[in-house]
Image (cartoon, rainbow, N blue to C red; front, side):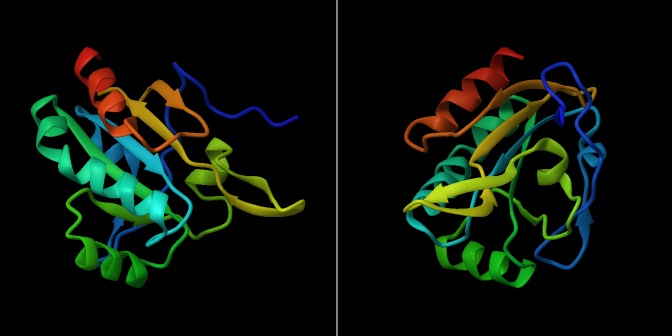
Length: 157
């Protein structure tokens, strides 16, 4: 059985593509707290709500010394459209590569829908401390109230 990084472990330092065509990786945030929220798909109801909730609280996260990064497998171009359509302010990144950050953390996993198995992103959030260590993990996130709960944890860290 594969074991994935947990609380107290270093977040894997794997690069992700930004909508602008650049790249970002967890070590870019060293010295700051970081919330990485993984979500299944741009422009779906739950994912849109989650991204809007984190965007609405971005200033509060920044006041708590915490950066945000939303991650899905969607292409960078789709992220750019999603950001523009909904006025999102929480930065997004693409984890399209096999063996990427979502694979390293075990959040790209087998899911079930209508009895059919498929690979998909498990809605999960990681709070990373200023030293790059995982401070808290939320698995199988329910969107309602989640961004607020993560903000409280970031403030307490």
